[in-house]
Amino acid sequence: MTNLQVVLREYPQGLPEPGHFELKKGERPVPADGELLSRTLYISLDPYVRGVISGKHLYADRVGLGDVIVGRTVAQVVESHHPDFKAGDLIACDNGWQEYKVSDGSGARKLAADIQPLSLHLGILGMPGLTAYAGMTFLAKPQPGETVVVSAASGPVGSMVGQIAKIHGCRAVGIAGSDAKCAFVTDSLGFDACINYKKGNLVEALKNVCPEKFNVYFDNVAGDTLDAVMSNLAIGARIVLCGMITQYNVSGTPPPGPNLARIVGARASMLGLVVYDYYDRWDEFAGTAEAWFKAGKLRFKEDVVEGLDNAADGFCRLMRGENFGKAIVKLADPE
Ligand SMILES: NC(=O)c1ccc[n+]([C@@H]2O[C@H](COP(=O)([O-])OP(=O)(O)OC[C@H]3O[C@@H](n4cnc5c(N)ncnc54)[C@H](OP(=O)(O)O)[C@@H]3O)[C@@H](O)[C@H]2O)c1
Image (cartoon, rainbow, N blue to C red; front, side):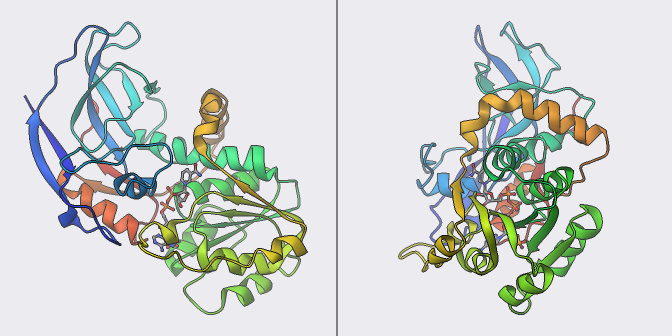
């Protein structure tokens, strides 16, 4: 009747290390009336968790020392005293980095078992997928024939952005941090091109790949990559500011930003994106994206580590940019 958990041992300064986290054996909680107990099957490792740990996240409380690390999960209901859930139900919920959690059901979504692997509900069919869908559908509004550029292109947000671009009849150009990631982005995801920004001059590479300039840039990283893409914007371009992962581990003075005068020259728009504004679109997104998936229109890649004792290491690899695909921790198979 135990409950293995990963808790915060020390606040990281800069990049997190596995030693900032520790395993703790707690007691398995018991659900009261109106509550359910679920067992975690998969944990999503997400860049925003770095901001929650350091208290920089806009919408979540800072993780305290000794507290369980937060995170979206796929879980199976073990015991339920809640009218909407029964034992055996598969759910997406917020169990965090632990084996079991009691909840009142708020924030839990029931999952059909016909989409496999179930961990996709944490990646392209989960919060990162909704982020890409919302940013493309409601902010970027891509038109057939336009060119869409996206950074962190092999990750769940970036991979979905490019595939949605292709579904809309656009040209998709990825930016990623290794040749292997770029090969996956073009060969498996079907992007038209992908540039390894760690090799050569990104500004030149972007001009070579797309002399006619870009109509949409979906920015997942900020910093130098954002500055480089802004040197090649088409008139009327839209920039969706989604993520700034180059800055999540920086403490002290932020690095100098991009030259925003380029936005003016291109009469472009930059659009801020917060996925929570679109949570009332879950059913629309799930219906659309699951139909795309079942029709074979979506590909994905996961970077799975096994067991809670490897969760901290997986998160630290994600923070160093070494994950290749949606970062997931697998705890158990459903029964
Ligand atoms: N606005 C919102 O509501 C919202 C919602 C969800 C996610 N996001 C943001 O979207 C972005 C992508 O999220 P994701 O879940 O799809 O992540 P992900 O792509 O699986 O992982 C992050 C990737 O960022 C890239 N990266 C570039 N510079 C980096 C650096 N200095 N340190 C670490 N990684 C670096 C790495 O890929 P390369 O090797 O290819 O560079 C890394 O694999 C993140 O910035 C995230 O915070 C925003």
